[in-house]
Image (cartoon, rainbow, N blue to C red; front, side, top):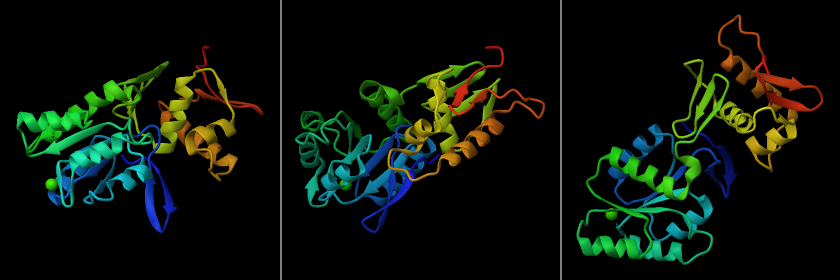
Length: 251
Ligand code: CA
């Protein structure tokens, strides 16, 4: 699932990561590895950027602000270690988790990689499953918001690590916007969210989206959450001249 807003920047389209979807930047010069990683990461709910250009890696990281970097050891023109050192020396990029990808499995290289500031190290060839579980382990340590958080309200549950929403035992399929709106509501059940608040939280501060767009997505969310055709309980209530609120009819 790809969640993100497309934004034109300097004549190229950049997919902006949002708070919900962990974004990964792959810096790797082997096309086959990028393709394999992209396929597996996207299937696991990550937003994926890639670059084979080690020399511009620093600028790229600053522009993309990824949640994690998969960094190849040997790149044309520079090494992953150099990039790692550079990222760690800068305040803006220091905290971004880095997993080094390398064919070198020697103990000395592993130590060098970790010394230069990598958070983990994986030796090629590796299985995609192993890499994904390493990423999740790094996130558990460094980005707890991405790891296994489940929000519940009534018979609805939302798993933030798998992006699954379940109502009454059945999976509910939501678009990315509906997912984010529901997440906001689930984080603070019974709190009234004004349209302005939802707009800011879901679309971001600089959005020029009209307020009634919020209503459109709320209605989509309501229909997606409906248990069956006879289910008329609003679940997401409209509070007149105030906004929306998550509430059960029995509350
Ligand atoms: Ca390489």
